[in-house]
Length: 137
Image (cartoon, rainbow, N blue to C red; front, side):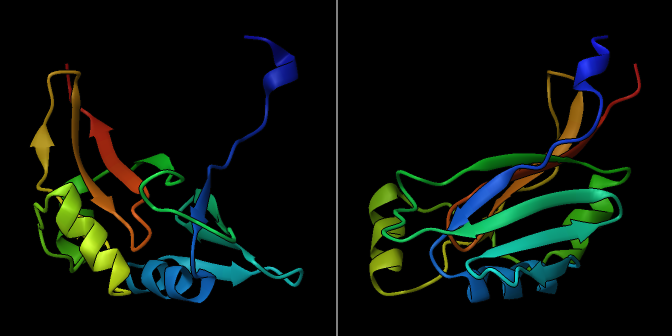
């Protein structure tokens, strides 16, 4: 291990509306601290940390980000997130966005061939958040 790289990292997810994104993440159990500088927030729960950055001209179909959150019990986390499993076409998602609606949706928990038990959800701005834990070998 290269000691120069010791520390931590945080993903930065772009959003169109910081207040809406902050409300979404608070609703699913995160603490959100808005930056005094504006247009930026810090999201945290149980040692998981990432940031939100409001971006002018944000396009959720071009600029959305991704983050992987490692948790002990993805089934319990999935159960507390109250989102529909919407399987919408790209055209349907674009229409929702044009109407000012959230793009938030969730997928079921599964054991994946790459050795993870996981699920994913999209936040209101179409950022992909994958949540999982390693399967026992």
